[in-house]
Length: 190
Ligand code: AMP
Image (tube, rainbow, N blue to C red; front, side, top):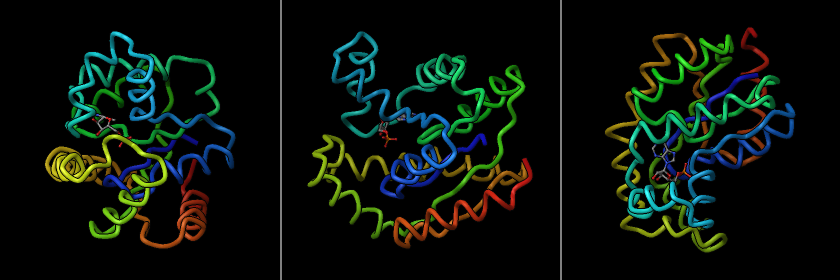
């Protein structure tokens, strides 16, 4: 199972990715988590990406692609993987295609979690209270939505054309969304 979870901030990608990772026993790869870890540890990469992540801007493609390339070169992805928050631009999607072609690991499906913006904002505000994520502030959030609209949405067409896109109603409960994803994946040929 090689899956991409796609959707706006607050769509529930992280939540569903964790569950899918347990269900299929495959690694959950979140570029956002990787970046936050670098910020926490104050690494050199952390310093490079700090301004972007803190202001809600996308980190430059070259940096993100390098990180994912390294992560996908490890042995544990041979069983499959769930990508959460990557790719977020068409250039990243093209780079991913190249990386996966070399590894002979074609994608199983790209799951789009469809959530209306008001619902997504509500969820982010709840997360801000629960987890205290520094990029869940209102101005940063607006920026993240803008980035999504402008740079990430075109990725949907990219995968739709390839016949990989599966649309899921992400506005339901965590359990219901999870069941819809499992059902959809069972219908996808591997
Ligand atoms: P996330 O946890 O996926 O919402 O990501 C948090 C932040 O990390 C984003 O707002 C971006 O600044 C950065 N980031 C994560 N993934 C990517 C990506 N694929 N491309 C560019 N920036 C990213």
